[in-house]
Image 1 (cartoon, rainbow, N blue to C red):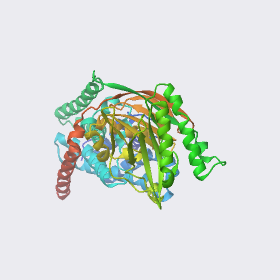
Image 2: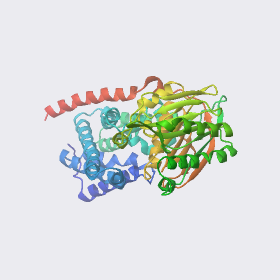
Image 3: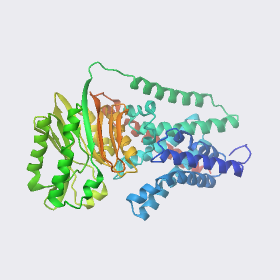
Image 4: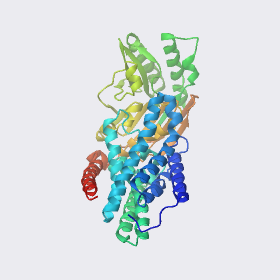
Length: 483
C-alpha cells in the first residue's frame, strides 16, 4: 500500500479533530464560514491512502459525524428524534463509503485522473438526492459557499453541482499530490490540472461579477414583517383575526410607498382566507395598491372546502390581479395539514418585462425554478416562512437559484431574512427577523435577465458526473477482483 511509516496515533487524532472541527464550522447555521469545507477532507483523504480500508471508514465516519453534530439542535426543533438520528448518521455513512471508493481507485490505478473519483462520487450522490428526495437540494454542501462570490458563479454554468465538485476536488487533489510526492511519484500533470481547474473557476467568477450592462432598469422594492406576537393576539380569532392581520400588513404599505417603493412584498401565509371571503380580501389589497400606486405581492393560506392552498396574489398598481400563484412544492407538514400543491410557475408580464413569483420551498428545486430562467424572468418575488435557526441558510439557498437562472430576487421570510439580491447572488439589502421581530426593508434592484449556460443546457454537468460515476464503478469492481 505504502512505503511510508505507519501513521502515528497522535497525528491521526489531530487530523480527525481538525477535519471534524472544519466540517462543524462549515455546516453551522450560525457561523457562515466558507473556507473550512475546502480543507476539512484533506487529512481524511490523505490518511486513507496510508491506512487500511477499515480504519479509513472509521476516521471518515467519525470526522464527518463531528461536523454533522452542528445541525442536531436545529433538527430537534423540526423533526422527531428517530429522524434526527437517521439524518445525523446517514450523511457520515455515505461520506465514508465515498472515501473508501476513492481510496481504492487512487491506490489501484496510478493515473492522475483518479483524483476525480472523490468529487465525481460526491457530486453524483448529491444529484441523485436532488432528484429523488422531497427536500430537493436542501442537503447540498454547495450552500456553504454562498459568501464566496467568485466560486458560486460556477453555478451559472453547471448548477450548484459544479460548486460541490470544486470543493471536493481541491482536497482530493491536495491529499493525492502530497501522497504521491512522498512516494516519489510524478505529480506534474496532477498539479497542472489542479491549478488549471481552480484558476478557470476563479477567472470565470471574477469576470461574471464584473459584467456591466447599460440597458438595466432599476426598481425600488419594499418588504415588511410584523411582530410574531400579532399572530397570538388573544383578543382576536377566526375571521376577525384574519382581518386584523391583513390590516397590520396593509398599514405598512403607505410607509414603504413614501420611501419610494413601487412593489411591496409580504411574507408567506400572512393569514387564512375562507373561500367565501376571497373576493373581499383581494379587493382590500387592490384598493390599497391603487391608493398608493404600488404593486403588492401577498401570500395567504386559502381554504377551499376540505383542503387548503398556499396562494400568492400579485396585484398591480392599477388594481389588476397579475398573478394568482399556487405553491408547487410543499413540505411534509403542509401535506399533513391538507394543503394541495399547484403545478405551474408564477410568471406574469409587468411594464413590458417578464417577472415571477414563487413561494418558499419552491426555491429548493432546481428543475422547477429553471422554468423561470428559461422564460427570461427578470426578477423573482418570493414570500417565505423560515424556522428561525435556518433563516440565513434558506435565504442563500434561494439566491443560488438566481445565480443559476440569471435573475434578481426579492425574498421576504417570516422568522427569517428579508433580502434583496442580484443575479450573481450578491446581497444588496438585508434585514433580520429570525426571532419574529418586526422589520421594514426597502432598496433598489436591477430588472434584467442574464442568460446562463445552466438555463440552456440544464443538468449537463451532473449527467457527465453520473457517466463518470458509472465508469468508476466498473473500475472499482475490477479492482476488487484483483485482490
